[in-house]
Image (cartoon, rainbow, N blue to C red; front, side, top):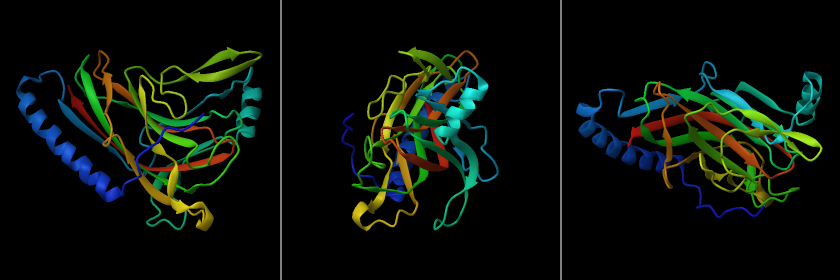
Amino acid sequence: MEALAHPATRSSHSIRSSFLSRAILLACAAALAACSDSDGDARRTYSYDFEADQQGWQALFADYPAGSSAQEQAAIDEFYELRARRASLPQPLTPASGAIELQGSNHSDDLKMLVKRKLAGLAPSADYELDVVATIATNAPRGCFGVGGSPGEGVWLKAGATNREPTRVAAQSGNQSYWRLNIDLGDQSEHGAEGRVLDDFTNAQECDTATFEYERKTVSTIDGAPLEARTDASGSLWVVFGTDSGFEGLTRIYIDSIEIVAQRR
């Protein structure tokens, strides 16, 4: 599938400056609405750095074959080289802070590797806009070739929000059953009803001169539209972040931090 054109990745400093500007505006709006917001916060910020643990974030793999038994599923997961764990950032990144590591070999040409988390403490049954800023580590240079797509430009970083828990369900396709998401994040380079493409997986290196070492990269919803979702009756939402791949090879991503600002509409 042909990738959408994305704007050039900005530096972490400029993205965070833009994020701060929007946060200030949101804070002003929240201050005006606070006196009438009796059933939940008008604005809340959630920050996760994964220094001690995964802080409630859970891994979710989808768009690959579903086994008919636990033994068959374990064999499929091993073939796809799936891994999800808390780990330290790889060298030469310093400081070697904590991160969530996701890994998979995309034999299905459509593998999604995600983390999900429930956000509580919002107003019940209310509409929210959510800005997401995530810092990752990637070793994929720009302009490389790969089977099915580039290891950088052929892997898309996505975020999504919904009021129901994102999970995977087995769906039949021909003679094979596949794990599919119960929410719409879109397919590869496409946005979905409950998710957006933030950027691709490339770092700042060019393929012909690359060292293939990991570099930090910050992506966000700031340059585009925020996520939109309605809370459930308890005032909760679910957020997901991760990769959607067309590159038929091994991808390993380290998620260094995630920050979410939820603003009531």
